[in-house]
Structures are given as C-alpha cells and as structure tokens.
Amino acid sequence: MVEIIQYQPFGPKKGIAVVKVLKEYLVVGIADENISLLTKPDPADVDEAIKKSGVNSTEPGGKKQQTIKELIKGKFFCVFALLPIAYCLLPDLSFAAAAQPPAGGGILGLTTPLELLLFLTLLSILPAILVMTTCFTRIVVVLGFLRQALGTPQVPPTQVIIGLALFITLFVMSPVVDKIYTDAYQPYTKKQINAEEALNRAGVPLKEFMLKQTREKDLALFLKMSKAERPATPMDLSLRVVIPAFAIGELKKAFEIGFLIFLPFLVIDMVVASVLLSMGMMMLPPIMVSMPFKLLLFVLVDGWQLLIGSLVGGFR
Image (tube, rainbow, N blue to C red; front, side):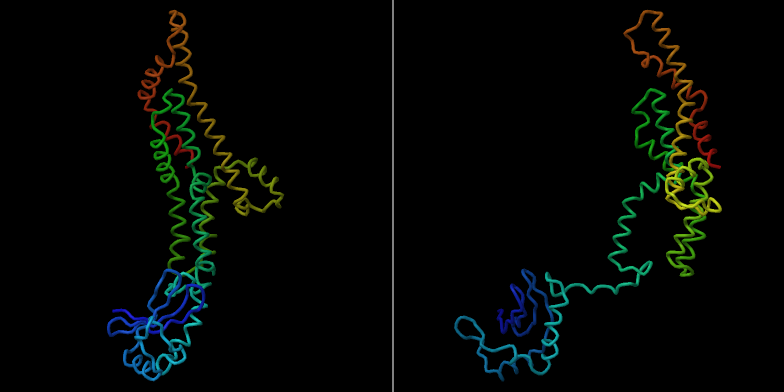
C-alpha cells in the first residue's frame, strides 16, 4: 500500500513528497518523469510529526491538509532546509545527479569537460597527424604507383596497401617513438614534468626526423609565406612551417620513385603493343598480354624486397 503523506511543489512538474510504503516512510524528489529517493527518515519521527499536526491521512479524496511547516520538525528540519538549495544546484532532469569533479585539476590546469573536448578533437585529426608527420605519405603513394604500373588496379587491395604502409611506417618511426617514450612519456607518468613540458619534449625528435627529410627550399617557401622571422637554427622553426614543408617534400620524392617504377613496365607495354600491331591484332588490348610479363619481371627481380628496402633505406 502506498500513501502520499505530503507533497510540496517547487515548480512545474517538480516537487518533493513524503510517501508511506507499507510501514516505511520515504522522502522523494520528483522532476518531470523522474523520481529519486532523497532520504529514508525514521518512521517514529514521521508518525510523531503527523500526530502533532493532527493530520488524518484517510480524508476523502486523499488530500492532505498538513503543511510542510508542520512536518519539518526535529530531525526533518535539516533535510527540508537543504532541499531548496539542492533544487537550485542539481540539474532539471534529476534530483540524483552525479557529483561533478572539481574544475581546474586536470591536464594543463583545464576543466575536465574542456579536456574531453580537446581529446576528442585530437582524436579526430589523428589520421592527418599520422599522414603528415611520418613517412606514411611516401610509402603509400609509391605502393599506389606500383599497382598502377603493374596494370592491376585492384591488386593488391587497398586495405593491404594501407596496412603494409602502416606497418612499414611503424618500423621506420620506431626510433622516434622510442625516444619520445623515454624523454617525454616516462618522466610525465612519474610526475617529474608537467604535460606542457612533455609535449615540448615529444615534439623535438619528431621535428628532427622531419627536418632530415625536408629540403631547405621548401622550408624557405613556408617561412616566407608565414611572414615569420628567420630563426637561428632549423630546430627553432615552428611546426606549422616544418609539417607542410615536410609533406610536399615527401610527395616530390614519392613521385620521383613512381617515375622510376613506371619505366621498365612502360617498356614492356610498348614492346607488346608493337608486336600486336605488327601481327594485325589491333582489337586485342595490350594490357591483357603485357600484365603477365610485368608480374613475371617483378617476381624474378624480387621487386618487393628491392622496393621496400629502398623505401626504408631512404629514411635511415
């Protein structure tokens, strides 16, 4: 059996009620369609308060005539005195909202929601960071040129090319990652440095790697467009100058390697086309005849070892 002993509204569809369930009394908060338990008072205290107020809980219509002032006596005073304050501080949807962590105690001294926003933003641009600051660009472009030169646009599949390029990138970048782990991550986890210092230390080996693969004319181009002062050393350059200069340098080198890959296969295509033309087989596509010879040539010279070895060696 459930009885509503007292209900005190605080706004539209919001209020506090004292409810009797069997022999127990409950103080609940009501907000829209949510009901939350606030406290469980002693039944003896509630019965005593009801007797003193002279309330008859079985009046016709089920309406209670006692007021909230008659009920909040003794041990109830503290609870009901704090309820309006709780109503103002807690969210509209629920009286039992979880406690919020203190602000200003996280990484870089930012509040937790702002840190979460920054983390999600960083997570969304992580693929771009991987592509633009590592050797991934050169490797995946060269593998794409190889697939076109062989005349097999669907073999190897794109997933295989991306996976191979990714693991080769991890292999090439492993010294850089190890240095970042040793110089930045470990001191940060041991509370020896703060997050800002850890980020600065992590950027040093990455910048060194990019500068080794970047041409001076590319750096000068972006330094001129940024209208920044020329630094004393390349390591003093900003990442907003180094990263795009490194990216276009990687594309240039990838195109040069692609040109060298195309040359032997282009010779095979021309020879096959000339033979077919001399035999009067003009309706037969040369690609159908030349592709087996291209694959045979690539396998005989151990093309994968030559290509991957040259790509990795270019970063050492």
